[in-house]
Length: 123
Image (tube, rainbow, N blue to C red; front, side):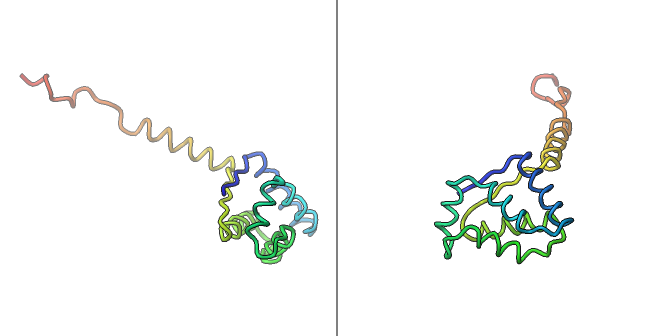
């Protein structure tokens, strides 16, 4: 199963994590993480878990997290979901900008040069 969060959702989550770090309010963070997932996604995750309890799963992730870095929590969430066969895709604005830069470089890297065509020009 694959779960995809759009940039806006990821930005909201990142802000929520940063607020939780500042305020020390992990219960609100847990609730916000749970609300990001649809009922169908939660049901599928619970089906794959040994405990069948998504809230406990999120609590375990939060307990494992060092409560210092936003990216660390996102990585941990992706890793733990991956362990039960669920791929979580997070598309952040920076990654989209990097992809666009790579695309621009690929387009302009080697322009077509007609002088290199030796088929009929060398008689």
